[in-house]
Structure formats: structure tokens, C-alpha cells
Amino acid sequence: FGNDGIVIHDVGGSSAWLNDIAVAMDGRIVGAGAIGNIPGQYSLLTRYGADGTRDPSFGGDGIMVYISNENDERLNALVPLPDGGLLAAGDASIGGVQQTLLIKALEDGSPDTAFGGDGTVMEIFNGLDNWASGVVLVDSSFLISGGIDQTDGSSDSFIAKFRHDGSLDPGFGEGGKT
Image (tube, rainbow, N blue to C red; front, side, top):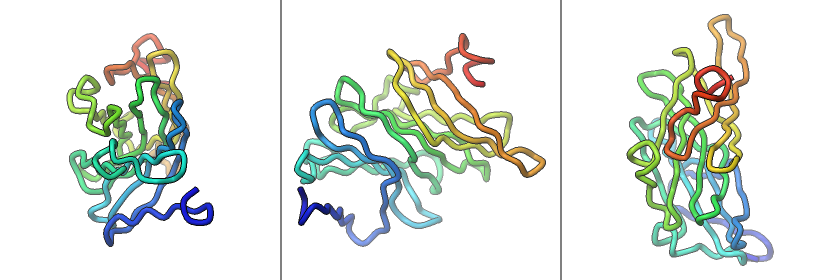
């Protein structure tokens, strides 16, 4: 596996890191994180073969960088999908407010435009900073966990349920969130 059991993925001089990894049903290894520096930090998805080599069928070199609307974002969790795609969850700062970010990628790494129209969904809860830290596939829906900063300086946790198209499931909790 890799070089003496370690894989170092050089991304061409930029800082990069993975916050989560998983093994897909076909044995390939997938990762989610960020690339760049603040400002200029973008969402990163990677895919490797079971032996740790970059998978060229994913973005041409095993890496896909996603840029939502701003330049301060990261992915914190991901789940491989049965069709070979990925769903990743994290956060992005939009207009100075940190918002939950979801990215759904097809098997080749390209955005799944059936999800949110462009492969991404941004969700803000109660107008406060929030971020996603976990994701689970449930049938064809996704449970997202994370945190919300409160105006008194404390933080609370949340769980939200999103449908396969990126919309909140109104039958879960209050309008798709608890």
C-alpha cells in the first residue's frame, strides 16, 4: 500500500488535508477535506485504488476541487453511495456566515446536477453560523449532523435529513431538522 504503507498526495504546492476517509463498496478509498489557505480554501474530494494509487477515473488524477460561492470552505465527512458517487458534508462561509455545505459527486467526480441544481446545497439554520460534521446514507436520503453557534456564545447540535435531490425532508423533525 503506497510507499511503506503511507500515501502522500502532493497537490502541487498547495496545502491540503483530509478530514474523513471511507472505503467504497468496490474497495476504492475516498477522502474529503480542503485545499488551499484562508482566504482561498476550497472543498476537496479524492479517490484512490485499494493499493493507494490515485484513481485517474476520478477527476483525471484522483482529485476534485469544488468551489461553491466563497473562498472559505471545507468538507468534514463523506459517505460513498451505491452508484459509485459520493456525498460530502462540511461548511462554507457566505457573506460572513458559516453555512452547512453538501456536495454530491458522480462516480467520475463531477457534480451531480440532480442534487441542488449544481451538485451543491448550502443550508443556514436560524441565521446563525453552522457546520456539518457527519453524514449517513439512509435509504435514498442523507442524515447530516453538525453544530450551530448560538447568540449567547454556546453551541448546539443538529440533525437534518435531506432527500436525494438536496431538499430538506419536511417529514423529519421541524421542516427537515431537529
